[in-house]
Length: 263
Image (cartoon, rainbow, N blue to C red; front, side, top):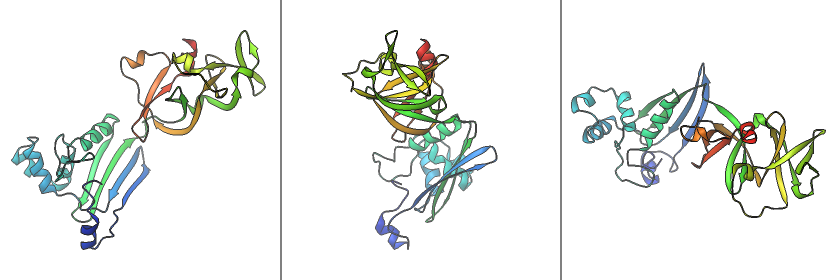
């Protein structure tokens, strides 16, 4: 968008609306999910991409000349290769599409590009259905955002934990005809947090062999998350099962409640 869609006055001169249009579409095709991002901008110039790749030392002149235009479009994914006339905070450094291509291929997918001069560009991300996409409940715990798999959540309630009855010193919440022990999620995670509000949100989830109530500061809603496994050393941290990234770029850990309670 930053340098692929023309400035309003240039769009008007070429007979286009002053405002550019970017479309995002997703569909299933057999065992793949296709994510398409297209614009009605100026399109990509394969000759400029070939020249930029040669100038960056990514390809020899002979190798660049041998590429088809469709193959040349993917030169935009090489590190350091960009046709932007000006480097901004958003683009021009030759790192954005490189990161996209690596992320797609890490998931076992493929990246394709189609473009026509003056008509726009379409990027196609072909992703396998085996990518773990799960709904998670986002919660606020001491200012941190954490996720709980929805499949493990039975419900939630707003309660004054201090007013709950206790069993062997532990608060219990009447839920679905049973008494569910309530634990403070911040304490389970070892967070040091300021004084808590009298009324808390309690999430009832599957614990270590039985249901458990987890007291949190706030419920932030449901989110469809692409879950990524944790690498060392994070996979050794008890109670963490995966990580996802929100639309604003914020990483969020997904909790394994059963392991967390058992620890």
